[in-house]
Length: 381
Image (cartoon, rainbow, N blue to C red; front, side, top):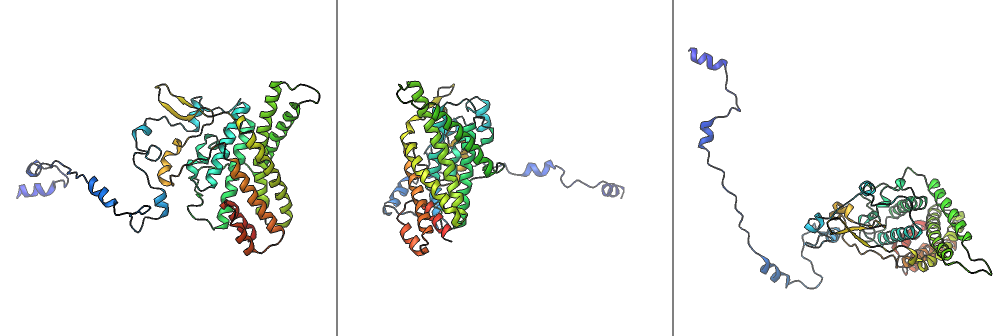
């Protein structure tokens, strides 16, 4: 009785370890995998598929097909060892390491960076992902940290243009997922800077460059010094890009007002943009050419030394976006911009002439730029 009472006063813990029970449990079996090679059966099954056919389930749509990863492709397979060994730097790390210049950039460097940004912008407008186009430029990640006035103003105005195009396309609501990728993956579009301030920064840089163009111009009856001629051509190249971006953004904003009084303003801006595109095409060789550098171990560094265009900082986003990274080259970006300006000019002409919406839609299908087609429908609404 006393023994029973003592046991009732001191109850056993439920989680108390009992060596008698554990000793009777069998040891954990060793896990073995019986892999079976299905390579011959797989290739035999593919013989039943015709060219262009794809075997998939019901949940596999167009976006999943465009986002599929091709194994063992360094540009698509982020888990490859060759990608793991590469040195990836974000904006702050590149600045701290001295690999990203924020000030004292030459004219050639500025023209090269701006041409690369415009080429990325054109590629994004053609339906490619932002993570592989416009967001590959480190200067667009934190434009307010750039000390160079021209590059800071250009980067901020580019982000404003991206936001304007995104809002315009969303308001139209007539694009398919293979036409446009609106996702910006949480990147800031410099909303803390107002549109008026961004335009003022561009005007200040533009006026300064215009004075430089006039100061280095050849005097009548005098020989043109080669050094002065080079400064003049570099200033013209940089001036044309700054002015083009400012006027192109102003034209889009004027079109989105849906006001008849804004149409002449947009037409003047687009007319100037068309002329500036020709100057940009003729001065594309004034920009600094990108080239690869090597790190301390002798491996190829993926960063371009000055232009800082790389998709590796966005490597974790690759699995969430279609992998069609066919980047427009710096030598070919001017033609799509000229086509876009021509399409917008057609919108103004049709809208100002008060044509019917049906005629606008039928005739406008001749243009290849889907962005201008969407703008046409938005303005017509």
